[in-house]
Image (tube, rainbow, N blue to C red; front, side, top):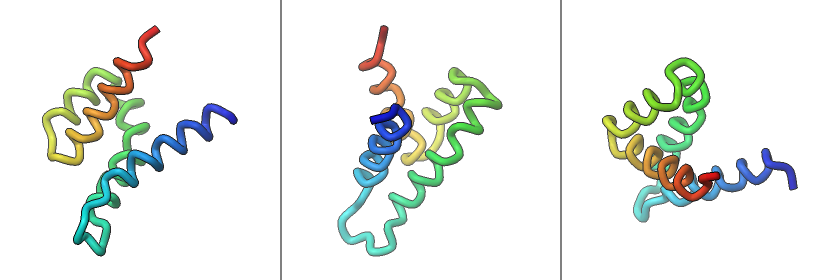
Length: 78
């Protein structure tokens, strides 16, 4: 399995994890997915440190993504 497929699988798992009961329109999943799709552009333009600060300072969806990135970076230290 390629690294791209593993990353895509993990992303799908994280997006699906945002599902809330009684949310027929899947608003939280859609919001989280949209944020994830914009993340590479933000990383390229602002850099990792500024992106992390931005995510940490913003709304709940942003903070959830920040927590996922923070957790992942701690678990994959060299």
